[in-house]
Length: 491
Length: 68
Image (cartoon, rainbow over all chains, first blue to last red; front, side, top):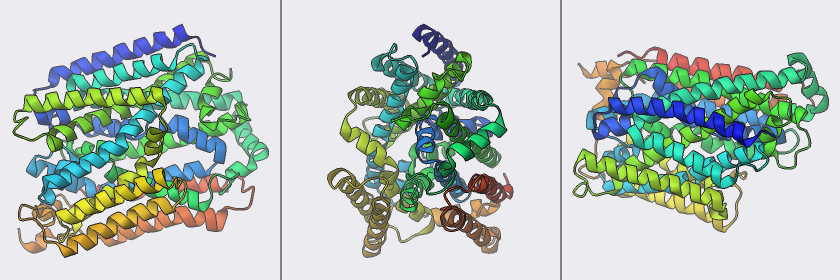
């Protein structure tokens, strides 16, 4: 176990550093909506890339993915790399998102899709779907912070104290200067995540006698874990059920797709993508190797999601490295949490509240700030309550958010797509997802769930679109962006 | 600009096919070719490492032609 005062002292130092970064970011803000939610659309490639990576790679990696590796072996690496391959969607969609946001001044992805179909209702439905599935996902980040801090201190730090710490940090960094403080702190946090992960894995392998002994140990002690399906978890249906919805993460999750609006130019966009690729591949390998190391250093755990706390308190990792990794995981959770809070705030301010009620930039920023506080409080409350319905919705988030993918693809590649089709597809698909998972009890490990959700939302979008007419106010992204795409030599 | 200038640069179909093949390989190779032996050694780990690097290369090729 690690003593609570020691953990508190490093968290205090970490918080102080974050506050300084956020404070400096706040001084650069000009008070406009575009500045608050999108950093003035002038963020460079490296900061955007590290922020994107820190937002995408949450506490999931060193808690859940490590646990999945511990439980099922190398299939966990494959699952995460199929998600990683989904980043290829950025090659096609990042230029379109960026150009559309520039031309029409969109702040949230839901606002963009609503305008494309000429319907505020479509924007609201997309924002509502995101809220329903992202808020529980925030709760899991909070719960991850709680489990980690109470786990490594043997309960000395209570769940409430851990969650309250995460809430204060996430709230402050998001509220202070919006995207700019989130992006800057994200970039710093990503460095902590990567450095702590490399060090922790290095010490774990060293404790096992070096790389050769680590590999030999894996081959001799847990040979099945190097196979697929392996010891049981990664059957082909399960692998497909988890990987399929995650492949579309870059489109379906607004907290990452909104990052495409913040870039200053195409060069920054390319650099952002390259940074995400480098960070993502390295961090994925670290998380999976960490899981394999836990198998040897902390074997026979009943609850595999405790693999990381068990390894950290096993004595194999020096305390200072363990403390650094705790900060790394805390960073991963908070960077995801504050990004989701910021995006949800933007969606509520832009898509839900009538423009007449919040006509000024100041009112829209205030609305977003109130929403951010509510998001973090929601996540904190339900992390403490451990409500079953919230946990079910969190597990369902990847499959549930799939329903937004058909109207997003249609927005750029299918002129016949209509507002009625987009609304029906999202509502129908969302209802089917909730009905199957919550009412019928279909597991997220069952491929029938994501396949049915995808089929229903796609079919409803296409059929209803063909039966209805595009709204007169609908925008023609294909036609309007064609020349710009060609000029930038983007596909 | 004429409408001919508005055409997307060549190679999109080939690139999309490469991505599709890569993703397909992520399912077929571990389950149909390399996996299921019970103790494959490091073969699958090596495959996934190459897969990850191939993803990086394919995406880097996709963004390499972009111009400001």
